[in-house]
Length: 291
Ligand SMILES: Nc1ncnc2c1ncn2[C@@H]1O[C@H](COP(=O)(O)OP(=O)(O)O)[C@@H](O)[C@H]1O
Ligand SMILES: [Mg+2]
Image (tube, rainbow, N blue to C red; front, side, top):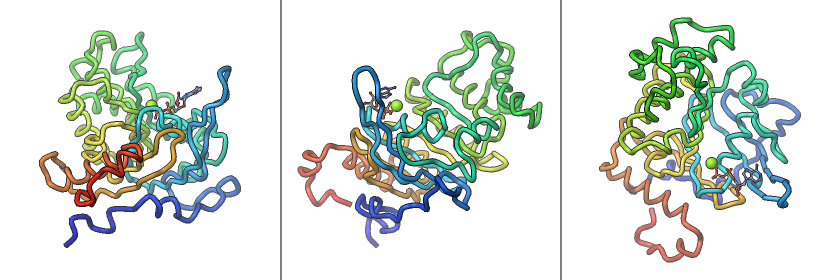
């Protein structure tokens, strides 16, 4: 049996040659999940133009967990902000099931979590976590407390964010992102500021909470940590250095829980690290290490 089942690896040429989606600016795709069609973005500012993304096509089926990996500045956050409807792309379009991102976000169908926890300092932890549910005018009033219990913060429900550690605040922010049971969950390096142990624990918690959701949210996690991507995701998509383009799309068929000492885990990490290296270094990789 080959060390690398063919079905788990989609070489870049295949990704780029993949048939383009039907033009979504005319009709929404029929399937649930996330559809990114021909999305490109150039920032135009006082200091000139910055081409952040070249046209990207990406489909994330409902319930799938995709990690978006790439070097710093390659356009990961730009793409995630476009998927979230926080930024209008220069070209192309995004659909969250049958809705445009801004509409999905407006009805609280998108859970968002970034490096900054975004908790409101004048509200208690419980009030912060409960806020999306209250704004959505739906859901179980007990859900916030139940989630706080689940992330180990029920003892801090009446505290204010400044009274918590960084890891505790991110746990509260994770609970807040999930409280309204959003079908879409978008995460931009949410654990990047945390120490390694806390980061690992929060990753596990994220997987557990997804499994416990009534409907497992379609998830995109931006990260620059190869280990985090391989530990958590169903599939990893790699972007090139700026302007970001899709260079690799790998399905990870490793059972959970995953551990770094598993041989296939290590092989996947090496494969992804090679894809992240600039081209000249890639050419120096001895062929016997290729998967
Ligand atoms: N508001 C902006 N105006 C101009 N350039 C920007 C803006 N936001 C990001 N960029 C540039 O776009 C590129 C991609 O940024 P970003 O998406 O934040 O990268 P990543 O998240 O992969 O680190 C970078 O070169 C960054 O400097
Ligand atoms: Mg970023």
